[in-house]
Structures are given as C-alpha cells and as structure tokens.
Image (cartoon, rainbow, N blue to C red):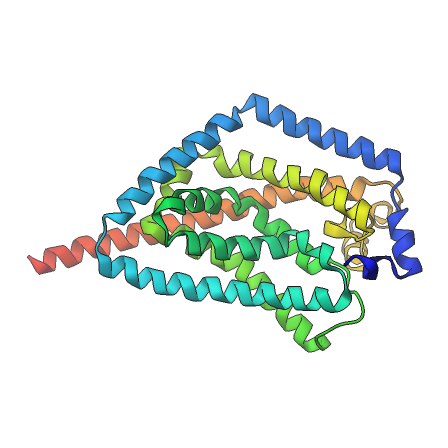
Length: 299
C-alpha cells in the first residue's frame, strides 16, 4: 500500500532532497537530546508516578453518583465517535491514493488516540492509562495541526477540493478542542495529574514527540518514500510559509528546516498545554463555586 508514494518524479526528488549522511547526523543528534532528557529528568519514574496518580483519580471518579457518570459516558461516546468518523475519512482518502503509510502521521494517530482515551474512560481497568495519555499527548497537538495544514496534497483525490478543505478544518478543530473536553472529564482527573507532575506534559510529552518523529516517522518515510511529517523535503505549503522568514530555509537542501520545525513545536506545545490546563482550571473553579452555591440554597 505504498505504491502511490513512489509514482512520480517529484517524489524521487523529494526523497533525495536530504542526503543519507545528513539524515543520520540529524537523527542521532535528536536521539541524543532524547537520551539527555531521559536521564536528566528521570522520565521513567515520572511516568510511573503519573500512572499511580491517575489510578487514584480514577477511583475517586468511580465513587461519584451513577447519574453523573452515565451522563458523561454518553457525551464521551458521541465525541469519540466524531473523532473516529474524521479518522475514517482520512483512511478512505489515503486508501484511494494507495498511500496508507501516511496514516502514521500525528493528525490521524491523535484523532484515533483521542477516541481511545474517551472510550477508555468508560472502563475502570484502563481508565488510569487513558487519563495519563490525555496529559502526555497535549504537547503533540500543535504538531498534529501543523502537519495537517502543511502536508502534501496528493492526487488522485477521493473528495472534492471543497470537501477536502472541510475535512481538514473539522480535523484541525477536533484535534484542538477535544483535548480540552478530555481534560475536564473524569471529574478533572487529568488536571490533578498535571498539577502533581507538572513536567509530565512539558518534558515527557515533548520527549515522546521527538522519539516518534526522529525514529518511527523518519524511518518509515525513508522506507516508503512518503514525505511523512515533512521529514523528506519541505512541501510547497511549508516553502511559502518559510519564504518571508528565510529564503535559505525555504530553498536550501540542508535539513535545517526539520530541526527548525522541531524547535518551534516545543514552545507551541507548551503554550497549548498551558492554555488547556488554565482553561480547565478556570472551569473547575467555576463549577466548584456553583456547586457550593447550590448546596447552600439546598440547605
């Protein structure tokens, strides 16, 4: 299912845009950064603590009234179903192009992960893993949106240009908004985990995104000849975005554009994570005040 990625001369030019030595050097550099982060911040211990904290929050949520849990369950299934429908449209489009390898990219993976997290909230046995994942994946959301907007527009297209633009817009909206809905779920369990382990998103989440980009995605891009996550060459959309900033980055054969993207995605991921956490905190405080007022009126 990778034949469609090898069909044109343009694809061959993209494959050789960055030479093998540069690919190896840049990949080893970022893997070194990942190793430093792993050792300097004790990320495995932080992950274990996050799972433990999530398990405690899950048990507290389970003790709530059945009516509250049931109402939230219906909403979770609806939102999860919407994410799966969007992911299914991406599958249908890529199947039509015979480019299924492109489904390893962040947009599709995060849409499916959001749905799995929401469905995981329904099961006590896996809910703590879902809560942990909802915090861990927050920094990857800007990467997914950027990838969705900057990726190649390959032919042939299953959907019309208008339908493709609508699908892209809805997918970007879901990628951006659904994490906030997830964080306020399970009685703000993910919010409590994030507060107790503040580096879970900022460091561990970024480490995860680096690992995926510079090992799995780059390896599959080289193997399939598909420009996954723009790891083989800048797309026309990216060139037009970089041109006003730097003509060298927009046209040079050096692989610097990938490191520039990687570096930019960290602050964007951090800002997005902070925005989600702060918005969820404000929502939690308002709900707590409303609950106190309601209890006072009841008395």
